[in-house]
Length: 302
Image 1 (cartoon, rainbow, N blue to C red):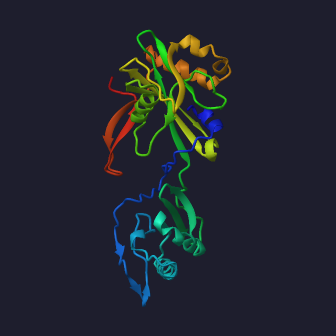
Image 2 (tube, one colour):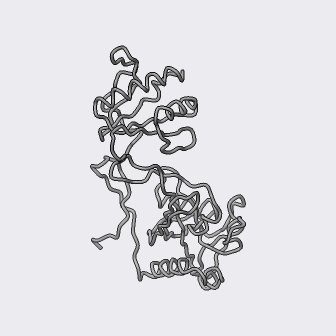
């Protein structure tokens, strides 16, 4: 759903770790392991490894199941890390370790973020302002613009009692975890309407704060090419879907009163008519993380 509608529908947000100057990567390989059953002056310590920023990541798999044993090891470990000048401490506990959460909180850990199956906690050791990155702050959504051979646009009616109830609008939805923007746009169109599509360009995006669940929202508007025309709606997601004229879409009172939606349609039509060009997805690899990723930009060579 479009960002302004999302806020009113209060759809559960898709949490994402915000990109920041210093990033913690939970899956990164340990640079150095403090022995899983390590000792310091006879005291048992929790297993852990150093992160790249002078901090520590606790090896949750090595933690004792006993809350008392965990409290003792954690307290001793914090003392060792403090003496070594360590900074941030990261602790990721899975559901089976839920009884250890109040122990960590009692020792001074704070909630950072949570998803299905785990909770992340942090501890800041230095006597100075904490510089650890904040928890996930944004949800990511897409809006898809498709025109058929008759210059009719693909639209849907949401199955909800929100402000957009009964209004024809572009297909929209949230990006799944680890999903590319263009893949999410193609998937959402297919799931809601049954239409197969090909991603062409990213033409605009909207950034707004304090919407659903008090999160910030990024909505990316994508131009897609339809590869099929027969609509088969998912009745669990939407009420209806049609190919209608752009004029009919814009004639709705809802659109007449919404400056953002009118501007989105202007941009989409200008892109379709080759009077405006958006961003195309290009595969690139960065030495920063060594991973293949997609960079969206205008082709400067053309």
